[in-house]
Length: 180
Image (cartoon, rainbow, N blue to C red; front, side, top):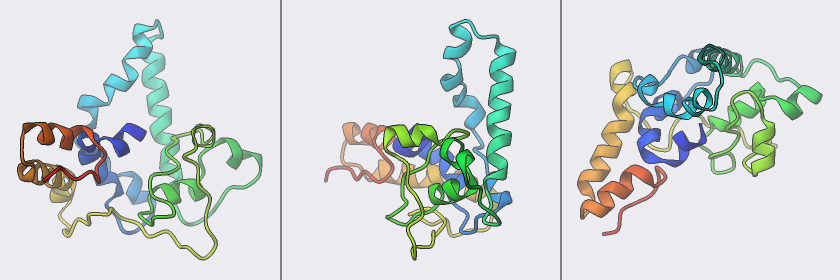
């Protein structure tokens, strides 16, 4: 998931999930159109290391189902559970575009990964999350929303001065700007 936020080619596909300016269960349903064609590379090492492919498929399904319920502003979960598991209050900040919350709380099920890797952030009193992407998608057409990230990336690549910078547009973080 972190790669989808830190590599522009993956963000072009994943950004559809973050375009909503509202945060609710329908946001969870905004999934990547091409995701099944590339996300398998992140799961592929598990069967290659000997895990049963059915177990890997089951784990992937549980991961997606778990993340559905955390797309809500209706409630929060406290106590020991929020110290270990991703909860709605953590994931709301992940979807926020505010500078205070940008690029944080990547964990799918476990928030401990963010605590360990320094990407965990807590709610800042008085700073309400603002949802959506830094480059807003100005359409309500779901098909156009689904490919808007690619349109933005292709436009940036076309504006790049040379081949090297076009390739860098694909692999650098989404906010990276080519040399002029």
